[in-house]
Image (cartoon, rainbow, N blue to C red; front, side, top):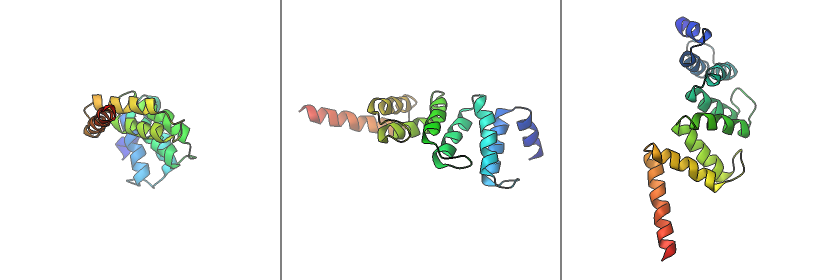
Length: 139
């Protein structure tokens, strides 16, 4: 833990991410969701997509921060634009159901397509089903 903290304090984004998980789970330190968010914020500001995703989750659930679905979406977009599949899925869900954003089927489809482009099997399966529905509607 000592080496992890030292690396995190020296600006190592991966160490900051891991220290955030340590605080979230109470591993080697007292469990503290607010401290987890602080460390993830440091890593996220350096472009760490996993930290950005976790900040989105924290804001979505209100873990260690005030619940704010719009901020959750902002962080998920940053992570998703870097190819983070979990963030892309959460954005798909957010836009499909209007959670933290105005419901927008085109934006939901955008994130579904990005997931499929990365080979996500669930996204590929969903696209196949959508195409099958379109074909049956035409006949």
